[in-house]
Length: 232
Ligand SMILES: [Fe+2]
Image 1 (cartoon, rainbow, N blue to C red):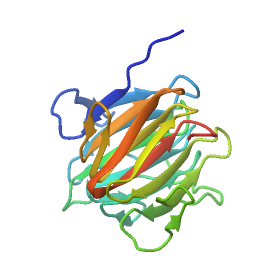
Image 2: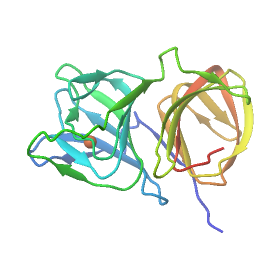
Image 3: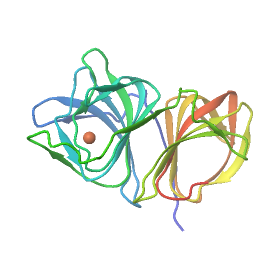
Image 4: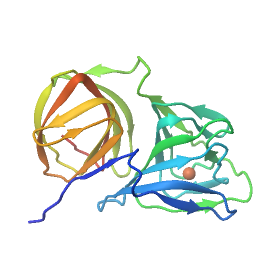
């Protein structure tokens, strides 16, 4: 039997930030939160200051970005708060923050992987960046359980899944997570029987973790992160 305490981290807690320096001397701030043992999924908080751009590159894993505040830019397109942006494995691009905005975001990979910087703009052979947004009105689906879900992305290799959940005020559920899973509170509050999760807080829980949850009086909008197939 193992004992596992959930990881709980708030983006705006000043502790835990480190500086990552690129080869050209530019840098960004990163707060490591989760490295999940199953596939090596990483869930970190990150902060690009305005004008920071990671040089043209590709990865041996897929990465998704959830924009908490500011603007994320990739290949000439920009994505504002609430955006969930997926770069599939092998997609070549230069991503960063535009000259006029910082970008505060969550960084989520589907598995362990590395980065390969590219000297030339190689293109991505049919791979496409994908995006959705938590604040867009479309795409919501009412579930039998009584909350709404907007599907994000499901990784075909690892089964890792991202989706948005909209939980009405006062909604109460007691549930056990069947795979290692996370929740990031975008708006509102999610209360458990022993603690409350406020906006901009990420909780990461092991398979088998059981808790009684209730949405606060404003309801709760959250990003759900599953490390593999399954979940609740
Ligand atoms: Fe990247």
